Image (tube, rainbow, N blue to C red):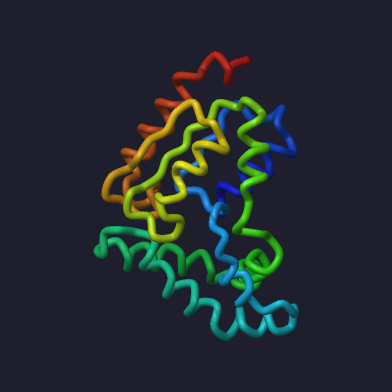
Length: 180
């Protein structure tokens, strides 16, 4: 959901953004099942988050990487983040209140601003499948696109060096825009 947040920020404060990089962004699916299953009443969401949230979230993480050997370390990292009070409730609240599908308009608006954009997508992404790549490209009109082979949804985690090279090369090529 980071890409949706980044695009929303861009629309709100375009004068503060010099480049935009999106990797396997969400929002183009028309499947609303995940949000429809999220409890709609705060006491229920709070109970569900406390009782089942950790199990639901950690069970989902195996879909985020293509290399099975990375599932356990990723689960450990993410699990550590959600040990803080309120974090699971926050996750469920986001699912309840922040649309994560049908966001073509957000993409279209972000693309219309002319901010140099890098759109990258991993071939084995099961969370936001690469089938959305062409639609995202058409809406965003990025200046650069990249396909990350044999990688899942968490490219910065699964392929940190390759992802860092992509992003740093993209930003470096636009240094004049960043320094202005």
